[in-house]
Image (cartoon, rainbow, N blue to C red; front, side):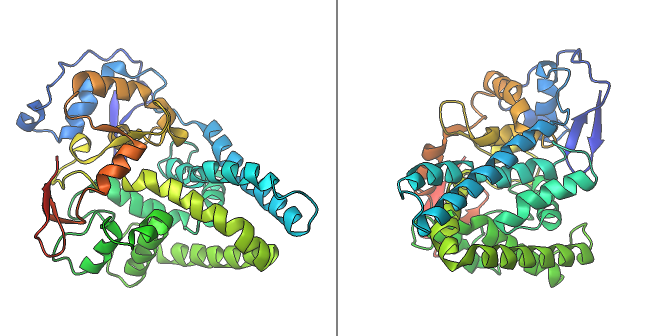
Length: 361
């Protein structure tokens, strides 16, 4: 059985036993004749592939968050020892790559916590979300609300995370999505923070309405500011510049390479169509950080931790071989550099003048 959760879509209920009758597999074009949104059709087609424990919360996923905290703390400790001339600078050759490589796990852990895939609602989830969010300059409550809005309107005109459309009021912000200009460095290093700050400003000014309390947002904003100031004071300017800043810039860049490849090379839509608006990526073979690269699969089953989505991947490859888009992570990034930065129509990207146009699918 499945139940409906209005934030996350169709979920398997507690009574799911994995014995649901096999649905006839629709082909890559059959969804257009259905009365249901495309995502609902795909979920029905994949039900028979899902194991009986599919969708159960996975608290042990927090090990990835603990690993990220530990490697960053180790790197800062080593950097401090180097600055004090107590150890060889060569140790940074080991600790910096480790900290950078695990840095995306802060955001990816916050992502799964926000979807309820790790812990049930309550104090422990709030604490874990704070530990994941504040080190990367985000607020857990507002970010989760904005992200749930994205899932409801993924690559829809109402999506707060989408590319800009030629003629948008805030069209200038599209420069961050135009990979032909030097401002792209801001996208690679600080995409999440730049977008989040604009969304925070829009929420506080009343331009955007989200199902969160303004008081809670202000409290978390104050906590985040105090944590940032306090951590900076404790580190001191030398450790901040020589230890934290290089780690954060490289770590954010690695994290954001995943994020910018999710939807920006796919068309706009007017309905829930993950196969038509999303790309899945892989870093090494079939591996990606916390399996975050399974992004098409995640949009179909957003409440499920990414490590449970392998069965969905196989089902999509078998049933929707032409509609399911997969790329290597570097290949997906390279594709972005081949495209202009704005939507002209739902499936045509253009530069701001509209002279360079590329059709996407």
